Each structure stands twice: as structure tokens, then as C-alpha cells.
Length: 239
Image (cartoon, rainbow, N blue to C red; front, side, top):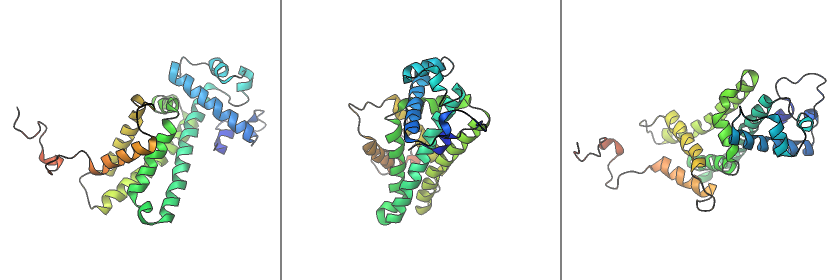
């Protein structure tokens, strides 16, 4: 699904002759292909070293053809990040509404957390380049481009944060700050791209289940004591 925002980026002017104003499936598909290609180029050589000409060559279009879809390299970077976060936010909003409507176990925060993580991994494990770009190149944006991507990132963060709030509230557990838990979760699931091998590792859905189990139950000591009862040296009196 392609956001209409991809056809109406900041800076558009009346009478703009680019094709972005054409609401066509063919245009949308080609634009998404270009964004994926540009993300791969930015991830490979870095944003500074990448050129519009290189992106056009990899995308199989002329430089002039590329400018029918974007006005600049800055806009390419913006659209890559906007497309990623807009898609993730909208997908989870739809899925969460369906789970809540289903009721029962499906509506529990544990189930919604699993769905959130699965959606995240489903996207980035098949497009690791966009994860690299979203985490490494955000600081390259400025002005409206930066503000709009940051707004989407905040929305995405709070979708997860609210789940952790609900989890800890239901357990009346004040030992863990939901904000810290949310940030730790993103750190964990974003790091997957550095080690994931589809030939040997589990599917996104299976990994999501493992991560939820880890977040909910941890890797607690086998003797039943809480982690807080152990000192940094293992609680064994080792100097």
C-alpha cells in the first residue's frame, strides 16, 4: 500500500509537472520500487556518496525519468523513511483494532505486542536496507521532511509504549518503566538486522513470540529469585 503522502511531499508547488499528482497504481508501484532501490544504494555506499545517477541506474530508469518521481536526493531520503513508518503505523493500527474487536485472548496486550513485533520484523527482515537508512540517516533530514518523519516515529513509538503501559498496569508492576521497556524493545528488534540469516534463523512470527516471552518473563534465575536479588558480581561473593 502506498501512502498518498508519497504523491504530495513537502515543497510541492501549484502546477508541478511531476507525475506524483497522478493517483495511479502503476505510478505507485514504480515509486515504491525506486524507494527500495534508493534505500539499497544509501545503505550500501552511504547517503553522501550516493548520487541520483547511481539510483537511476540501479532502478533501471533515466535520470530524467527519476525526476518524474522525486525532485531531489533529499526528497528520496524523506520518502523512504515516510513510506516505511507510515506503512508500519497504519498496519498496526488496523491489526490492533481487529484484535481488540475480536476480544478474548486476542485483545490482550501480550497478543498485541506480539503482533507489533511481528509486523516490524516482517517489514525489515525483507528490506534490511530501509532499516539501515531509517536508523542511520534520519539526521540528514531537515525542515518539513524531518518534522513529518519524526511525527510518524513518535506515533509508532507510542503505539508500542501504550502496550507496555497496559501490561505493567495490569500487573501493578512499577519496577520497570514502560518507556525504558519500549526503548529496549526497539533496540533489540532493530539489532536483528545485524545477525539474522533467513537460511538458519526462525521466521518473523516465531521470533516475535520469542521476543515477547523474553520481555514478559525475562531470563530469570532458575532458583526463583528475582534479578534484583543478585549483585553485579553474580551474588556469589566473587571479588
